[in-house]
Image (cartoon, rainbow, N blue to C red; front, side, top):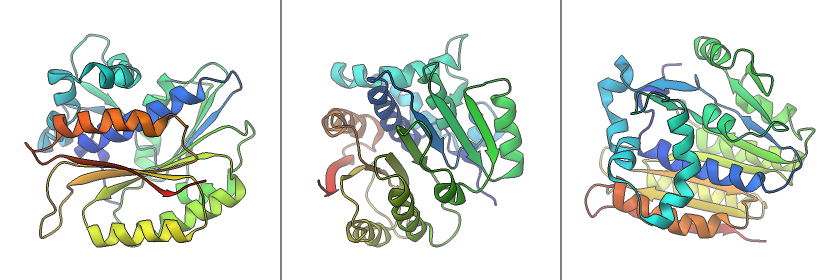
Length: 282
């Protein structure tokens, strides 16, 4: 496996992904009952933006860097506050040196009764992830194929929570694997919330993915997308998407506030587009 998220940490796709994640977690906090988050492709958890890999691409400068430098409109800023607090928590000296991946963003929003299961298949990354959570009794880090976990770790004993799926997309067939895994997971735990991230590069491939989701028979599928530039040939990353199954009822409205603001802030000038669409309703 050659993919290293450190090259892309804090980029525009991370900003959108982690904002959606925090809004789901804030909603789960509304009830006192505990919840569990299962992060199937957790990475190493924390990324040094001054490290060799992040500096080589500098993608974070046009992602979290823009958000902190330019800010968001008031309504969007209020919704983004929990996410920005999670970033600030990893930079206690101020400024921006370290960027939290999804496990640490999640951990920041857990209450004492909540739990995180972080899965990572890459041995070196799993070792770093374990070190980053050493001594944390609310987090269980396991070196495991996240796809396999969707067939064996559901439903969680809390019966409330979120499954976050953020695969590296380094192997062919990832979109088909996502439809299959979501269908199987939903059969085991139909009441859970599922958030599946995907890169927007090949529009035909993504159209097929959405069609597969519609044919799955799963209800309550919300599609959230943001693009920062027009498609190109050969394909390059020009957008980011998230499929949310059983989303909080407030999420659609929140994204209609956040995504336009992010499109204006993160896109190439005048090129930003966003969409909030139900692939399947009730």
